Image (tube, rainbow, N blue to C red; front, side, top):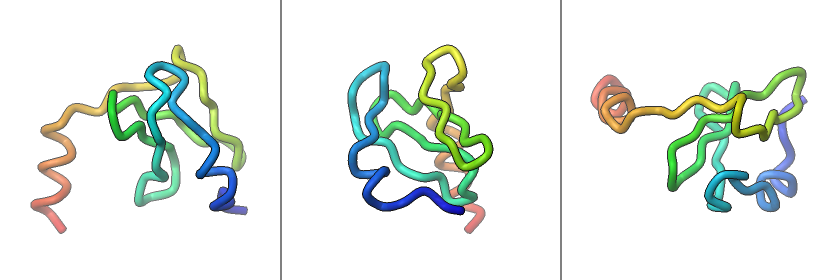
Length: 67
């Protein structure tokens, strides 16, 4: 079961309060501002700062070039 659009609209990054977006592979939510990536486990977003990783901008650029 995928995350609903309604849920995605109300979720915000707990660190900076910005919008989060579903990653293309559907395994995590990424903050548009601070680039923290929150995992999704068993269809439940784990919105804990301690569980997040920070995705480097270089990773975003690299993925964009490989498409």
